[in-house]
Length: 345
Ligand code: P6P
Image (cartoon, rainbow, N blue to C red; front, side, top):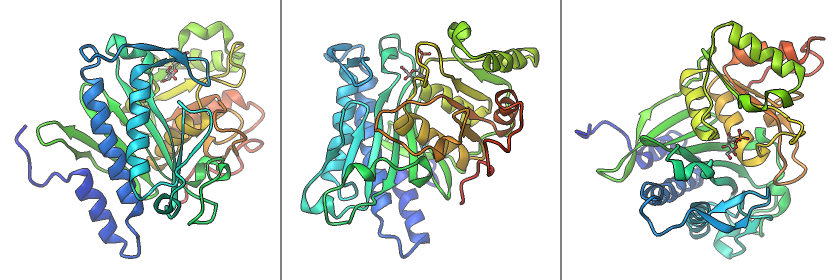
């Protein structure tokens, strides 16, 4: 690709953002660049997973009793490494760890932020070459700077995120992140080893022509969900479901549509994790003008009780989520959603 000198790299973009806010310390910019570095290392391994001497599944299971893939562990270690060795993170929570990890040393304790992540979402799809991804959310710590971070720093609602993003390892590798100032997408240019700004100021279309749900669970869904899916089909919408949240959500952000992972008989509280799957995408989608609900609340307003709790999630174009609400709450929306699903930007 002929490299256009005007395309900003992730580093240049975050520094440009920093220059716009002279009082900013640069800690968040540095943290995002650290995540970008980990993403490049994960990309290199994911792209050769069929060849690398990294086997598929390990003999361990995570807190959700899901088989841990070797690349899950690799991705977790890459993110932990850059964040622990950096100057912008006091501690982490990960799908791969039951508890938080406090980076209890003088430098990290001075950091303002903690990070939660799913290091490699959809990793069960690795062996079939389906797009997978990393998902992360960044929170300003509540505990006193200069001390070790605590669990309360992590158990914050999603509306307290200062940034959230994902990396999709697909036909190209993209890093997309949101702050309250907007959502921006960066495509990895392997020829220079840099993420380059390819999708500035991303907006989620207010409507869309696809719905994304696992049809295989149809008989486990509540009646209201079945009626909404039928409504989508009667409108002639396409059904698109990769089975990898990052891939399904990347398409939804770019093209519009609605992604649904409802409660089922087997998973009465849903499957997707609130803290490091639902909240980051809810933040991103809302900054981009879309909406994200659990069926009884805005996703980002849910006050978490534990690190790995799950939630039903309905997320995407504002008009489609609005249509779904009418099926979920035929008695009226005011009873459930007191204020519009907006993030104060
Ligand atoms: P199901 C992948 O395992 C994942 O966590 C998400 O990436 C994806 O959206 C969902 O689970 C798929 O779940 O039950 O449809 O296979």
